[in-house]
Image (cartoon, rainbow, N blue to C red; front, side, top):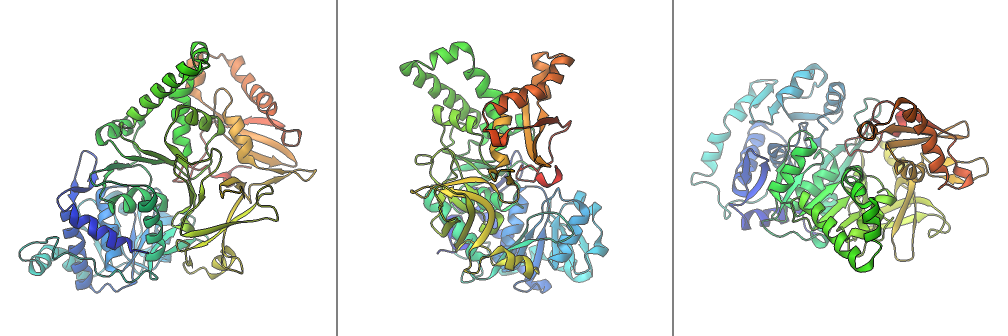
Length: 548
């Protein structure tokens, strides 16, 4: 296995003057500029007395300097603690303290809401916007930061070059590199401990299976504090010679598409929810018109139309996308059928923070619809079932990318692994003879019917979500009755001109239409309307535990 920093070093040297980390319509760091910043922080950390293995937290929105800070800390052999910028301030305080972080990279807005008294180990805080000092517990950290340029000039009097730049150490694959907290709760936080080897295995798989060419570009949409974004919109593309463009806070759809058309990304990493919205707003209205239905039934004409539709979608994302990669949840079957028909270069992968993050993937040319690909090369995936092809069991995994445990939480670590060392994912699935994995749902979400049938809410939700005017849904079990909580698309209702009576009839119409596609044992007893969108995690999965 090759250390990801070795791969990155080679890439930086070969593309020394090319853009590397960029704010869309803002600051740009070339590889040379990135190297200089990494070295400056190395000198500051050394001057201040930061030791190998010390924890340094990073809590800010996606910007180029977030990525610079991550690499500076990781290359110094300190441990990065990424914390999502939209966590509650109390949670940020708690996670900085729980992780034993001695420094914090953040921004003025977040810092103004934090309480330094709740972070007693913190020796200093840095503003991610300009690397100025927000806080210094004593004079030492501020003095070291203010000496950055002087220290750098002394070390490199003639400037930094590809010949005199090198990362500190790349023989530390088994050392802790990142503590990634999976939630912002303050009760029993799970800090996933990932080693340099875990991250490197994941990055190497990306390079071996999703080709990058020097000069490629990508738009970072996912939060980098989540390992999906950190690995596949930052470390993997950057170390392949790709320039990464950041949008800052979550942008409006119009700005996102404008950025796509300006940057021309080679790949789009996203979650199914985003692509399902694209389908509902752009593809379905066109393809469901009576004339289009007639034309797409004619073999020769069908291909011409589908190719045009795909080309139009590709152009909306910049025109150079070679791969659309989705993860974090299942893709709605109706949406997937459409993507397959138009020949979109899409695939759905599967992973989790504990796997840094990838467990399963398949190239779009070989991807089997409904699956989440095959177990990746650095991991062994198995189904805990007597008949893995037909009877769902827990998906379990062991490999180079699997975490070493949860930080300061031995009980949770023990519970996360089987006796023979496989990670318990908590997900249920089956695996066909070719190794394709089909996820049925989360084990804790599964509903057991009165006659012993396993009901997977995710499968019911996919059907409910296909009904007219439904935006999203959550299926729950109430005393043996299946209830679908539904949030309706208010814009679609308004555009259709539905009156009050028609709107009041929608829940029952949705229930009846969905039940016509469901077996008797999983019939929906009631559709209940929710008035606001469901709360979601940073990777846009619905927070199911909030709904009963």
